[in-house]
Image (cartoon, rainbow, N blue to C red; front, top):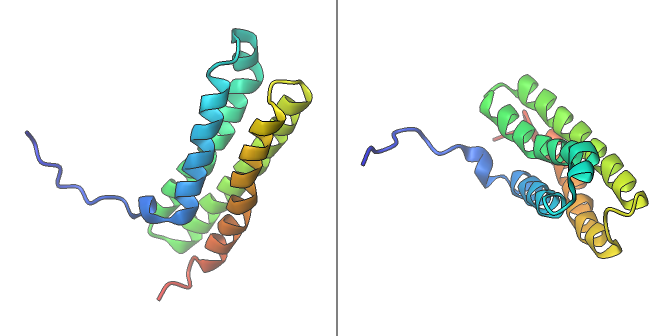
Amino acid sequence: MVKNNLARPDFEDLEVYKLAEKLANEVWDIVRVWNYFEKDTIGKQIVRSADSVCVNIAEGRGRFNDQDNRRFVKIARGSLYETISWLRLAYTRKLLTKDQINKLKLFIDELLPKLNAYLKSIGNRK
């Protein structure tokens, strides 16, 4: 067995990343059972935007440059807003149940302030 000498990425320890990953996985679980047309149109868009939140947090963290990190966190925030917009459309089009929306809303209501707080904290590390 080959031992991996790469350091474990520290983005995995960020609460904001963990929450974004939970949101992305929840969206995935919902969309994967939709029919082909629903998946191919709105489903792929929701999955991509939700995935983009956590992967941009990770990419920004990996830059080790505060300016780049902030830029990627702003992109993540934009992707979160995009996700919210797609979810609204999916709900209006009766692709999501009220229970699913309520569950996703819990993630989003916690994630947005954490994302903003994380953005403000970048460059202020001690």
